[in-house]
Length: 493
View (cartoon, one colour):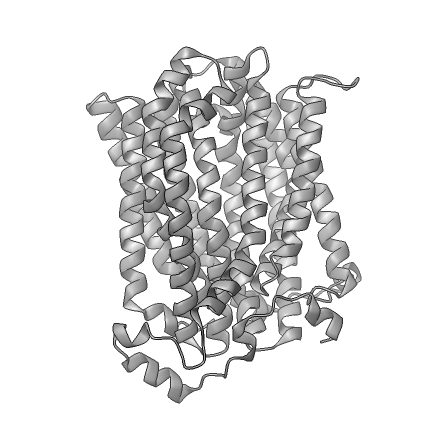
């Protein structure tokens, strides 16, 4: 690997740490929980926190900006003459789209885990091949999603809407969703580049093209949703076009960066002219990604069932719910940002046969995110109403949002540890257990508690958020319990 290439990588304590061995692994397995909490000789806790933050902050900035842009999308859409209907239309399109995105998310979890192990084991060319195979799979999945999703956009939207929502909302949502599927390839392939870069510890480059993409998106939103500087007022169609064009810009930057050879990888478009799938490399990715596919399918199924329950409450409640979910997504980015760091460092540590460092990195990632989530929770609880007022000036929407945003605030320090430790487990390849835990929370608990609280107890929107709370609490408890057992340290990828 060239010195120029090395300079583009994040330097961590792990790079210079001694390699583990089979004897070392056996000694680690015999240690008590108290003994495992002691840092290795010569290792400083501040150094580990520095490594975590060095990887987490670019991802945190990128994901937070993406969430803010999503919020700005909804605010701008909400400023239309039929703003509440437009918000419902965009929200309605999200779940059908995420059915197909779940395929990519599962794939990319496998890509990140594979290249993190390769990077930790200093197998540069093997990491290159993992990226090539991942890009091939991503491209094939994206083509499938584009064709199927575009053709069935309207039936998918109508299924989500139930009979409680107006035909105008269904038509707007269908238009928005079809454009999203036409741009699915750019989004899908870019996501795989991002997963591979994060696996090497490089979260700055994804931040750069993610920020650029979001800036393009927000400018085009301003020009195309309500029409400014001579551009047509396209409403939700304009919002969808802005998103797709922004994703295209990100893909171009990612391709150029990878082809330059300056960012660890040396993958070029010409590599795919005579490309042959490598079944062994694909098998490594699928081994980790397939359980994650089950997890993502479970999440989507549970969320779809739950979303239909909320949609049946009618327009004002559905709008309020989606606005609050959109605001809550900002908090998800906090957990996901530190989960990226945890996934990377756990994968690299285990690749170097250092499960002790994997545990130290993951625990410190959780502590950092937990402290920040408490601050964010207080903000949502006390000022959430004023954030919602940016989306809608409908009195009923604002009134319903107040208790919901208090719930959102309370959930912050509960959900964040679950996010980060799930990232640690994925970095280790322990995706089967995370899939099972997700099944319990999202497919069983959330819809069942939702049905009980909404239909039987008549709690309306508060019943829906009681179900979300039950899901988040149970998932976090189960994730923490499995993590504490330590079996994830011995999984082979």
